Amino acid sequence: MSISRKAALAGVYEHPLRWAPHKTQYQIMAESARGALDDAGLSIKDVNGLFTSGVGGMGIIALAEHLNLNPDFLDSNSIGGSSFVSHTAHAAAAIAAGYCDVALILYGSKWSSDRFAVGTGGGGSGDPPEQFEGCYGPTTVGDYALAAQRHMYEFGTTSEQLAEIAVTTRKHASLNPHAKFRDLISVDDVLASREVSSPLHLLDCCMISDGGGALVVTSAERARDLRKKPVYLLSAAESCAHTSAGVRDITDAAAKQSGPKAMARAGVSQSDFDMAMIYDSFTITVCITLESLGFCQKGEGGSYVQNGRIGLGGELPINTDGGGLSSNHPGMRGIFLVIEAVKQLRGECGERQVKDCALAFCHGTGGTLGLRHSGASLVLGV
Amino acid sequence: MADGKKKPNRPVPRVDEESRPFWEACARHELYVQKCRACGTVFYYPRAFCPENLSQDFEWLRCSGKGTVYTFTITRQNQSSGFRNKVPYVMAYVELEEGVRMLTNIVGCDPESVTIGMPVEVTFEDVTPDVSVPLFKPAS
Image (cartoon, rainbow over all chains, first blue to last red; front, side, top):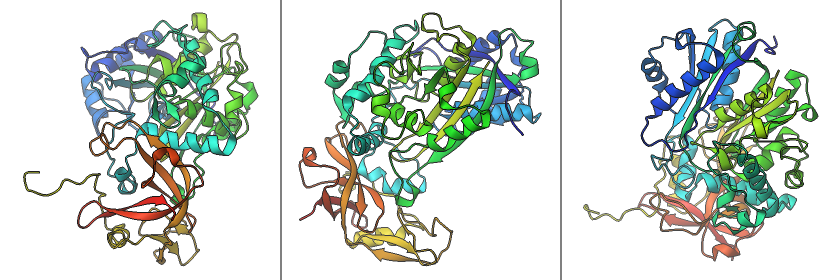
């Protein structure tokens, strides 16, 4: 059974705030819910499927309580930043199976105003592998840096090439009024920023902001009667990658498993996409993900991102909102990948609009490339 | 500390039922990985079964302690206690002669001198009287 065009994104909303010390996390989610439901032309009482991540172990029940909902379907799959990409796929499957018909996917975070050092702090999971890692001082930046260093060694990738990703993404952010960092930067600016964990510089790293967002997914049939042009889910796939008992190639991402599968399920290939939203926790994440998804050959990510190819007007514009590198990153960014792809497919992106955008790819990476991570891929179209 | 014990200078690994033989060996300053007797797979990190076939028929393989740096990073910023004052330090994956890679730190040299492919050998740091962690230093 194919999921293609059975469900659609009917409403999206990105919370405009990047700094929200005066709000609660659940308030950000409620405001986002209202925004996405308004976008769809639905009300909170229409919602019977609820999805979230980034809350406590059973926080989704408290979220239902906070919104006074009694949903028929709940899913707080928590696989890091890609969770909300995964929720979109799960919501479509639940709708196709008849388990719910209006799914609300919510995210809210105050990691910036809470001063949570997600990139350079510690804190163990308590899971079995942690005892073989925590004592060595891993950080989120450091775990990605391990992949970057090896990629440079094996393929000759340079810091200048990785910096191109940050420069292009900043250019896109300059066209997004809500983006946190909008002043243009150069490759030299990236290289001159302090090294956080070699070979990654500060401007190779995403920011930590506050923020949140919401998605409304419903059946294709119902979506056609709603306020906005439906954006259909054409296919999805998930994956994870880890230390593989000591032999994993650190220059591959989980995207290698889920990306081609999602494209095959939709009957499309890399060259068919008008744009892509690629989780950009770090510049190296984009480089390795593009390779793993097959947009270029392995080892060629560094040269692929040069010469405007991933910029607006290029062969594959990516992260047109300014990404986690320049727009927002409240700790987990998956929901924003889907929101921006939907806006592009609807033609609502103003100055940063990709011309005639009809097919978009989203790929979320959750966790770290160096230790373990999830991958969630979506193909969206109109 | 108030009880007079020395505070460990890095997080103490939480030894569990599956990993205890590994950590007991480390406390004797010996490094072991596991090898499945059914399929021959050598694996790390330690667990109570072969991750290829879930067989519990495995042996502990004493490592030579020699390997090469597979990849590394010089960490210049880490807010967490135990590492805030250690920066810059080198976190690395070392590929052991036995064929598996382990996360570790490279010590005993200038962080700037570490390179991928560099030959290294194991050394142990006693974190508590009962727990020692394997680190690596340039091969002699």
